[in-house]
Length: 224
Ligand SMILES: NC(=O)c1ccc[n+]([C@@H]2O[C@H](COP(=O)([O-])OP(=O)(O)OC[C@H]3O[C@@H](n4cnc5c(N)ncnc54)[C@H](OP(=O)(O)O)[C@@H]3O)[C@@H](O)[C@H]2O)c1
Image 1 (cartoon, protein in one colour):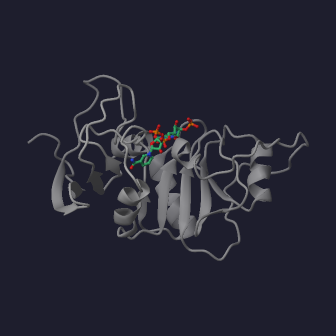
Image 2 (image 1 turned 90 degrees about the horizontal axis):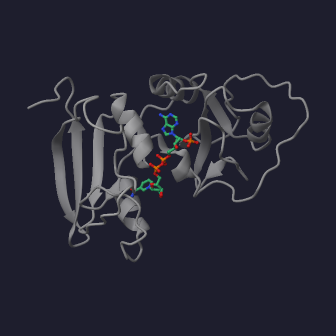
Image 3 (image 1 turned 180 degrees about the vertical axis):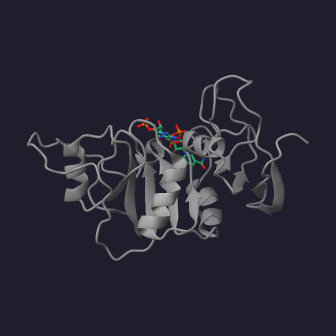
């Protein structure tokens, strides 16, 4: 993740030239079989066209679909209600996998089939993130996932205890926008859980005043 000193992640007022590089260059050094993002973040990469779903009766059942395709690197989107539409089944050099709940309509599944986009189901209405990771491994052979945000998706995986390491490029600036997403968006209000602790793996100065900080999650210990 790429964050301000106050943990915010949307760069609208940061005034940085080439702002993509601060995220992409360090991320490229973290080797993984797949990157995974939330539906809001993926909307930057999916189709901008308005698709009309077919009104025809579909014979598809709500079963996982692994598309025949040659690529072994994946772009995964947590899209429980099926809001992302696709022109192709690729984002740059990665094959798209949609993570869905059974709330999605059959015409939406027809759209994914027409574009040869893979999909898996991980819950009726609520996603089971353990099952998501299990299916990514069993169906696609994915062993290491890089969760690339935004804050809500990071927060869900944090709450489920499924983050092993955390990487942050810290920008030397304060944003201060109240209500803007932060690195981890988990719960409203205090009292429902304790914070997750990390051990420092490395901290490297880069791009002059930026820091690339890598942490390992402390398991089974929430208070020092
Ligand atoms: N600076 C950085 O490093 C960085 C990195 C990535 C993204 N970003 C920015 O962050 C912003 C988006 O962040 P965000 O936190 O608003 O959104 P997000 O995490 O990208 O997406 C949130 C959406 O994903 C779905 N979702 C996530 N976790 C879920 C769960 N456990 N169960 C069910 N659905 C789940 C929901 O979709 P539905 O609403 O469809 O139910 C939810 O509204 C964008 O502006 C993006 O550019 C910044």
